[in-house]
Image (tube, rainbow, N blue to C red; front, side, top):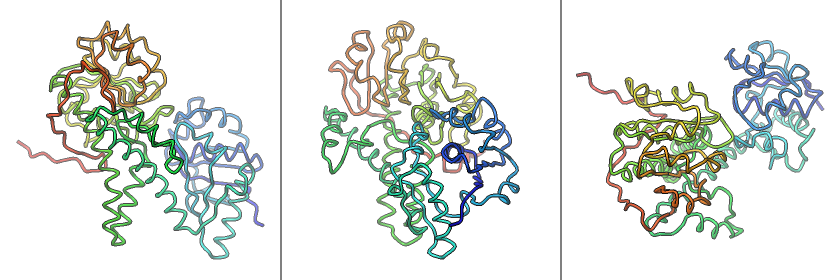
Length: 427
């Protein structure tokens, strides 16, 4: 059987970097070269400060970089000498979750490899299987044809996104009836046919994969004349958009129907904890809606650089003119962000937000002081926070019997980062 000795991976991003770093660590006899046209990104991979944050990644890279793991901009050379080129040879979709990518790579639920039924295709499949067999049990390596492999990737993310949108739809019903969505999720999650994974109500899912893959599924269905199926999956995206707009509306209405010139602390900008990735983050959408109403945002995230936050909020579909420079301040810590604020809004479930000194925060905030918990990270602190004096609003639950009545009166229009910016007529 053909044996792979040299691998080239095109793309040094959130998938290529961690995946090939783990392959290099687990296969010390294989030379792995990760190439990218972005010289600054490659330089970062070759430095002490990696371009992405992922728990455990730095240790993996440092254990094999310079021995059998290399990062380079010499794309043509790497392709010429490679026995296998990731991306262009066969279908090997990843099923990584950011924040646990290294664990997922070292102990995967499955590895999926798709290839043509031709002799050459099957030869390539067997060769790649041999690479993964260095550390993955054979029974976890699944082989399919190329279409099955690609659709499995889309379907997996679509099903996960669907579960999040489903529980988020129930969270709206819980707020209207007095039920607690966490209790509902726990009750239905004990049903073994359903299971308890991905039943965490929140301000909405983000990241590069869920929305992209669901929309790819929608596009495929439309292109193949399956409009009913396309509309079904489009609803997953629509519900996610609705949850973000609903959360922003709740902030505005609770703050007496206006946030104009009010300071609001945004805690968390990454799309989930344990990553610095902001792609399609719900924080971008919530910030956009609040900026449109004139709110002054003070944003803190422990892993997202200031430059990335400013770049995301300066996207033509998010803001216009000098809106960001007028309304957005990046804070160095959560206490600075909350100082003098009317409200704090938790958009990312960083563990550190459970351990803040909320009495200290309350003393420095304007009164009445509001907490809007978009990730249900403060559930165990509600009684304590209410004693301190906070007005608490959270996803899928009415927290206080004395809460200021909520009846949505503002209508926030939908928007997507994928849409072209709206051209306004010149005056």
